[in-house]
Image (cartoon, rainbow, N blue to C red; front, side, top):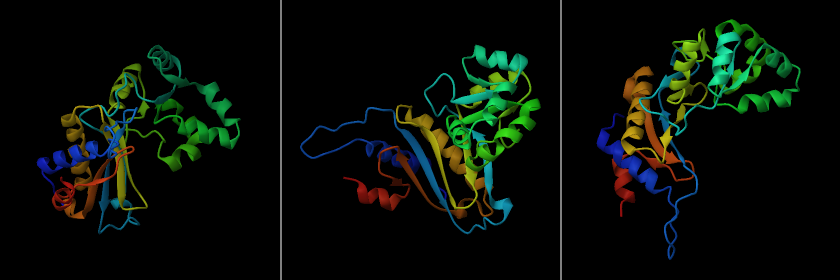
Length: 242
């Protein structure tokens, strides 16, 4: 199921339009927050019991997916990297902090790991992170991964700066138990062409990982946080045009 730019752009326009609250007799009303835009891809003819057909990787999109100066990350480090992270205004955790969290109740640990989108860890602290938090980070896909699977394991302050820039554009793609991938590709406030570039990158990447490329894509949808899903399909779009 390979789609062209024109169809993707048209589908994106409908998804954004469907995010607006429309009620007969009332003025159209946009929601008061900047909704995310998600891409949902349903796959077919896969055997997810085969590890080679699963995906668990972070990829860098062409454009930021959040309108922020810094991503929602926690930096686990020591010495120079820790100082640099604090200088950048990031949330941090040192060795004593890791030990302290390990002494907390299970409920607190679960809440803590859900607080951040990503964790960036200094390479020499990976063993301790694995020891104390791996069983909480792993199940939700937040365990930092070294390159090429991810960008969360660093060794210098310069690596940290690079990782922070990347994590404004990084998405986590996971395909493990269900033949479906859902990822954020941007915000409603972004330029549509930038969202479109991100969308094309996601579709092309997933197709490239599949045994039969685009033929493994069953269907695709776009939706905003509160909007109704829009199927990326010419016949469907014709049916909803007014």
